[in-house]
Length: 153
Image (spheres, rainbow, N blue to C red):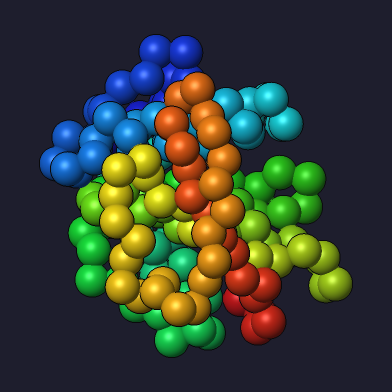
């Protein structure tokens, strides 16, 4: 079921099976607040049954770095704003993967990773990525990293 994320009243709707559900809900709300403040975009997430295209697209981009996650995806979202496609997947273990993909050639294109407060750094990242720390009223401490997309998707 689709869920319009409320960043004022944080809810674990759709994320209940996560061992870090509260922190992951805060991370999702943090993203919702960011897109609302930047674009006045309402951040709506979908189950994999409702949106069958977003996860395969993100996975194709991740394959550029030989990354395939064994974690259960809970929700996805994708939308376009100001000539850029944004896509997110929230995994049960607390990982969020987001893609920023400029539709015009030469624009910014990157994959970001955010780790929910309280989760361990997944083994797929050890030795490959350094994580910056950011404090958030909604999500506690967010650890994030990224890579620049080289291919065309």
